[in-house]
Amino acid sequence: MSSRRSRSRQSGSSGISDDQIIDLVSKLQQLLPEIRNRRSDTVSAAKVLQETCNYIRSLHREVDDLSERLSELLANSDSAQAAVIRNLLMQQ
Amino acid sequence: MAPEDPVTVSPPPPPPPPTPSLKTKIARRFVKSLAEVWTSRKLATEGGVRKRARRIKIAAYSSMARAVGGSRRAWSRALLAKLQGRAKRRCHLRSQRCLGLKRKRAGSRNMVRNEVSGSDKLRRLVPGGKAMDLCNLLEETSHFVQCLATQVKVMQSIADRYSV
Image 1 (tube, rainbow over the protein chains, first blue to last red):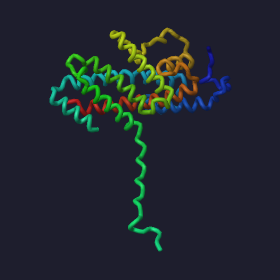
Image 2 (image 1 turned 60 degrees about the vertical axis):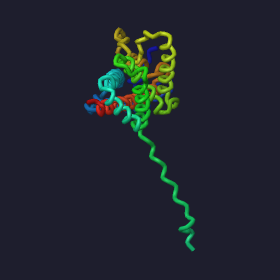
Image 3 (image 1 turned 180 degrees about the vertical axis):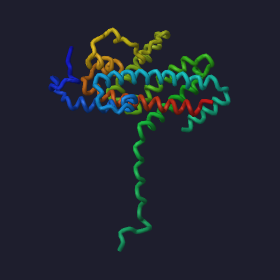
Image 4 (image 1 turned 90 degrees about the horizontal axis):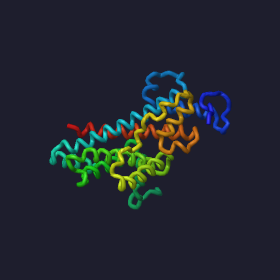
């Protein structure tokens, strides 16, 4: 299903306007840390999608790492410390 | 005669509480689930690090999806459905390690460099993305990325605060 909708200037066949897509892509662009820092306005839609995929993957990796870290926090501390941490968590 | 009688005037209604921010909503739910994982006797063993880590990860994704109002977003609906389906399968198949939340680079053989392949990859990464049109996909992706980044920040603050 080849449909060059994002970049071409012709009106989309499915009724979605080009402007809408451009707006959404630029909204997405603002969320990406790398592109935001570069402050470049000439980032193509394909690049934004690519960076978004990379960003999502790196976020998943961070969730994995942080889950491991949080899990180890309990294992490493002795029981008294763990009890303190648990109480602190329950109070929040 | 003043209409306000100091004796009978009723106290003004308290101002409505400000809507909690996304970060607060996610933090509250995640901390609750985290506390459950940490106090669960089954998981509080020395060797249960891996198991606990997996539970924490699942708690992170489910609290993130619930914090936005589980069924309000297509991605949160799809994510919750995936987690619930996986929970049922996990009862039968203990060795199911491929959680699928971390996709390998399946599209590397696809050398076609246009937005279509880019959006295909994105569809695989965003929960429920396969069934959306491009417009909705971009919209859902923005929200999903925001929430996922917030979830990561919450987890980081907790880990930083409690690590010795």
